[in-house]
Image 1 (cartoon, rainbow, N blue to C red):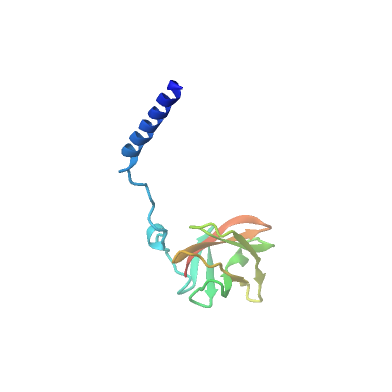
Image 2 (tube, rainbow, N blue to C red):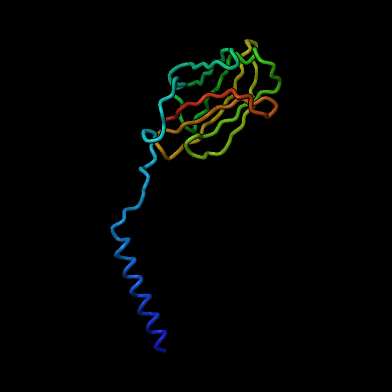
Length: 153
Protein backbone atom coordinates (compact mmCIF):
# COMPACT_ATOMS: atom_id res chain seq x y z
CA UNK A 1 0.00 0.00 0.00
CA UNK A 2 2.91 2.28 0.84
CA UNK A 3 4.36 1.73 -2.69
CA UNK A 4 1.11 2.88 -4.29
CA UNK A 5 1.13 6.15 -2.30
CA UNK A 6 4.78 6.81 -3.15
CA UNK A 7 4.15 6.09 -6.85
CA UNK A 8 1.08 8.34 -6.84
CA UNK A 9 2.98 11.19 -5.13
CA UNK A 10 5.88 10.88 -7.60
CA UNK A 11 3.44 10.93 -10.51
CA UNK A 12 1.79 14.10 -9.19
CA UNK A 13 5.19 15.76 -8.70
CA UNK A 14 6.18 14.78 -12.26
CA UNK A 15 2.97 16.25 -13.71
CA UNK A 16 3.47 19.51 -11.79
CA UNK A 17 7.11 19.72 -12.91
CA UNK A 18 6.16 19.15 -16.56
CA UNK A 19 3.48 21.81 -16.29
CA UNK A 20 5.99 24.42 -15.09
CA UNK A 21 8.57 23.39 -17.70
CA UNK A 22 6.21 23.66 -20.69
CA UNK A 23 3.75 26.37 -19.61
CA UNK A 24 5.80 29.23 -21.12
CA UNK A 25 6.63 27.44 -24.38
CA UNK A 26 4.79 28.98 -27.31
CA UNK A 27 3.41 26.74 -29.97
CA UNK A 28 5.09 26.79 -33.35
CA UNK A 29 2.04 28.08 -35.20
CA UNK A 30 2.11 28.85 -38.91
CA UNK A 31 0.52 32.11 -39.99
CA UNK A 32 -3.04 32.09 -41.30
CA UNK A 33 -2.92 30.62 -44.83
CA UNK A 34 -3.23 33.51 -47.22
CA UNK A 35 -2.01 34.14 -50.72
CA UNK A 36 0.31 36.89 -49.49
CA UNK A 37 2.19 34.40 -47.29
CA UNK A 38 2.69 31.53 -49.73
CA UNK A 39 2.21 32.59 -53.34
CA UNK A 40 4.89 34.27 -55.41
CA UNK A 41 3.64 36.52 -58.21
CA UNK A 42 3.15 34.85 -61.58
CA UNK A 43 4.96 36.06 -64.71
CA UNK A 44 1.63 36.41 -66.51
CA UNK A 45 -1.90 36.76 -65.11
CA UNK A 46 -4.63 34.92 -67.05
CA UNK A 47 -7.18 37.08 -65.19
CA UNK A 48 -6.04 40.06 -67.29
CA UNK A 49 -4.71 38.79 -70.61
CA UNK A 50 -3.58 35.88 -72.75
CA UNK A 51 -0.39 34.21 -71.55
CA UNK A 52 2.13 32.21 -73.50
CA UNK A 53 4.93 29.79 -72.78
CA UNK A 54 7.66 28.31 -74.95
CA UNK A 55 7.79 24.53 -74.93
CA UNK A 56 10.38 22.65 -76.99
CA UNK A 57 11.08 25.90 -78.84
CA UNK A 58 7.43 26.42 -79.85
CA UNK A 59 5.06 29.10 -78.56
CA UNK A 60 1.83 28.01 -76.86
CA UNK A 61 -0.80 30.61 -75.96
CA UNK A 62 -3.33 30.17 -73.14
CA UNK A 63 -6.50 32.17 -72.55
CA UNK A 64 -9.42 32.03 -70.12
CA UNK A 65 -12.77 33.74 -70.74
CA UNK A 66 -14.63 35.52 -69.26
CA UNK A 67 -12.23 37.65 -67.26
CA UNK A 68 -11.70 37.92 -64.34
CA UNK A 69 -11.87 34.24 -63.49
CA UNK A 70 -14.48 33.56 -60.81
CA UNK A 71 -14.99 30.43 -58.71
CA UNK A 72 -18.04 28.28 -59.43
CA UNK A 73 -18.64 30.08 -62.75
CA UNK A 74 -18.20 28.45 -66.19
CA UNK A 75 -15.02 29.51 -67.94
CA UNK A 76 -13.65 28.58 -71.38
CA UNK A 77 -9.98 27.56 -71.40
CA UNK A 78 -8.37 27.95 -74.85
CA UNK A 79 -4.96 26.87 -76.10
CA UNK A 80 -3.35 27.96 -79.35
CA UNK A 81 -0.16 26.41 -80.70
CA UNK A 82 -0.70 22.72 -79.92
CA UNK A 83 -1.11 21.96 -83.63
CA UNK A 84 2.70 22.24 -83.85
CA UNK A 85 3.05 19.02 -81.86
CA UNK A 86 2.25 15.44 -82.81
CA UNK A 87 -0.58 14.98 -80.29
CA UNK A 88 -3.73 13.06 -81.13
CA UNK A 89 -5.87 12.69 -77.98
CA UNK A 90 -5.54 15.83 -75.86
CA UNK A 91 -7.15 16.42 -72.51
CA UNK A 92 -6.79 18.85 -69.66
CA UNK A 93 -6.08 18.20 -66.01
CA UNK A 94 -6.36 20.97 -63.45
CA UNK A 95 -5.77 21.05 -59.73
CA UNK A 96 -4.97 23.39 -56.87
CA UNK A 97 -1.30 23.93 -56.04
CA UNK A 98 -1.59 25.45 -52.57
CA UNK A 99 -4.49 23.31 -51.38
CA UNK A 100 -5.69 19.85 -52.37
CA UNK A 101 -8.91 20.47 -54.28
CA UNK A 102 -8.83 17.17 -56.15
CA UNK A 103 -7.91 16.61 -59.79
CA UNK A 104 -10.42 17.59 -62.44
CA UNK A 105 -10.11 16.30 -66.00
CA UNK A 106 -11.69 17.66 -69.16
CA UNK A 107 -11.46 16.81 -72.85
CA UNK A 108 -10.02 19.40 -75.24
CA UNK A 109 -11.85 19.99 -78.52
CA UNK A 110 -10.14 21.39 -81.60
CA UNK A 111 -11.95 24.01 -83.70
CA UNK A 112 -11.42 24.91 -87.39
CA UNK A 113 -8.72 27.46 -86.47
CA UNK A 114 -6.58 24.87 -84.66
CA UNK A 115 -7.50 26.22 -81.22
CA UNK A 116 -8.18 23.67 -78.50
CA UNK A 117 -10.72 24.54 -75.82
CA UNK A 118 -12.74 23.19 -72.94
CA UNK A 119 -15.49 24.63 -70.75
CA UNK A 120 -14.80 24.13 -67.05
CA UNK A 121 -15.91 25.26 -63.59
CA UNK A 122 -13.29 26.00 -60.94
CA UNK A 123 -13.87 25.17 -57.29
CA UNK A 124 -14.24 27.78 -54.56
CA UNK A 125 -11.77 27.88 -51.69
CA UNK A 126 -11.61 29.25 -48.15
CA UNK A 127 -8.43 31.28 -48.70
CA UNK A 128 -8.49 34.66 -50.44
CA UNK A 129 -6.44 33.57 -53.47
CA UNK A 130 -6.07 30.07 -54.87
CA UNK A 131 -3.39 28.97 -57.34
CA UNK A 132 -4.36 26.39 -59.92
CA UNK A 133 -2.36 24.52 -62.56
CA UNK A 134 -3.69 23.54 -65.97
CA UNK A 135 -1.74 20.63 -67.39
CA UNK A 136 -2.06 19.25 -70.93
CA UNK A 137 -2.24 15.47 -71.36
CA UNK A 138 -1.93 13.36 -74.51
CA UNK A 139 -3.49 9.90 -74.28
CA UNK A 140 -3.83 10.50 -70.51
CA UNK A 141 -0.06 11.04 -70.13
CA UNK A 142 1.48 14.34 -69.06
CA UNK A 143 3.12 16.24 -71.90
CA UNK A 144 5.08 18.66 -69.72
CA UNK A 145 2.95 21.59 -70.93
CA UNK A 146 1.25 23.51 -68.13
CA UNK A 147 0.38 26.98 -66.91
CA UNK A 148 -0.39 28.28 -63.43
CA UNK A 149 -2.92 30.98 -62.60
CA UNK A 150 -4.61 32.53 -59.58
CA UNK A 151 -8.28 32.85 -58.80
CA UNK A 152 -9.46 35.38 -56.23
CA UNK A 153 -12.30 34.39 -53.94
